[in-house]
Structure formats: structure tokens, C-alpha cells
Amino acid sequence: MRPNVGAMRAVAKIWLFPLALCLAWTAARATQVEVDPLQSRLGFSLQTRWGQTLEGRFPQYEGEIVTMEGGRHRVQLRLDSGSVEIADSPRYSRYARGPRFFDAEDHPKIEFVSEPYDQALLRHGGELGGRLTIRGVTRREVFTIAPSACERPGYDCDVVARGSVRRENYGINGFGLAIHNRVHFFLNVRVRDEPAS
Image (tube, rainbow, N blue to C red; front, top):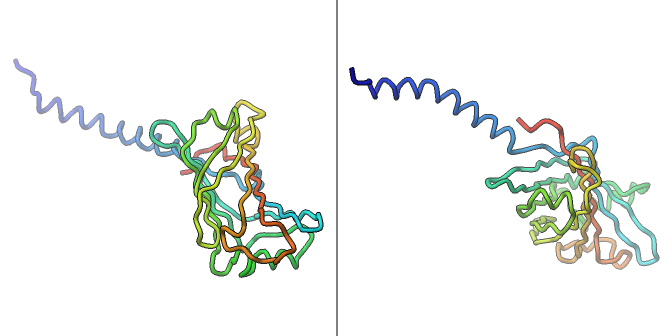
């Protein structure tokens, strides 16, 4: 008796379809992890002309690290410019949110989308390029990743990144001649243990 090929295919589809759905769901869950806002610190510093350092921070932000095809990764961050704070200075905090600096009313988000990178970058350190958008202006910037202090960077220790941008490139002309042209960004990033659903 010859095997019924059509019936065998139908049975295979019945068994394989749930398996394929399960594998696809598992892969989808593994492709993205969220930045942990409770353990991460994102901020910046400005240097005044008379040597004072102004420290700023972004208490509200969101982000994720996406695993791409081929196993490379991409980090995506969205910082709430309306929440920015300058340490110990409500007045400077208002200026930083205002129209001559981050302009939070018209540009509520500062965004960074990295170029694809290998996981080894987080362990050994190096340069990470990406697109930074401030006040609606997008430019390529490069951040320096510090070598990791642990085996699972982002989970067991911070991923530490530093970079500076020229504020004039983004139309940031607030504070006049009182501060230098460079805005120095720092990111100490942790991710959640569980992948984003």
C-alpha cells in the first residue's frame, strides 16, 4: 500500500504550525530588551567660561537594545527634553528646557539610534557611531564605550558611554557666551533581565 503523501503533509502541517509559531514568538521575545530606567543614568555636562561645570540629567527616558539579523545589535534611546534638570539650579533647568537650548516645547524628544555593533564592543570598549537628533536636527555622532567591568555588560554592570557634541551644530545658542560650545553626554546603561514583550 502506497503512503498517502497528501495526508502525511497535512499531518506535518498540523504539528509544525504550532511549533513554528512557538519558535517565532521565542525569537521575537529575544530580539529586544528594554533599558532599565531604575538603574540607568543619562545626562550631560556643560563648562562655563569661568570654569564652573553644570551637571544635567534626563530623569525621564525610554530605550531598547534590538538584536538584528546576524546577531548584531542596535541601541535606541529617546530622552524627554522637557524633564531635563541642571543640578541645584531651577533657573538653569528652565533655560535648558527653553527655546534657546533643548526647546522642549517644540522638540520634546532627543533621540539616538546607534549603528549596528557586535557584542564584543561592550566587553572590550571602542567607538559606537549613530544618529543623534536634537531640536529636529539629525547628525552622525560617535560615542566612546568603556571596556566592561563584568562578563554580562548591561546586566551585571553598567555599559558606560561618553561623547561630546558641538551645540552650534544643533542650533543651541542659549546661555550666550557664558558656556563653551561643547555638550558632554554620559550614559550609564543597564537593561532589564527579561526581554521586552
